[in-house]
Length: 91
Image (cartoon, rainbow, N blue to C red; front, side):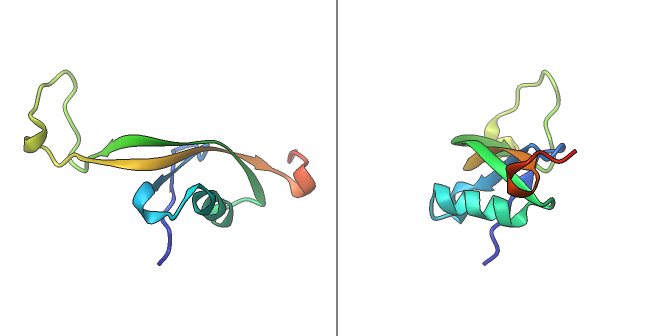
């Protein structure tokens, strides 16, 4: 089964649903395999509860959670930066 990494808009943060990965090491390895550039540095790996919604929420509103499509799950998060070959920054 392919592990799904979700990238932030700028590609500097990687997210992975905790239950999709056996452990921290598997998450980091999957980031490195799916990174689109040459090599990347993965730092500040942490677990956090995150919410997702397809419908979105209105600003400054109060809505019962049960009336939304919000999903709350634990995710792995990591800061990702591009590095060049042999650890040298790309110019």
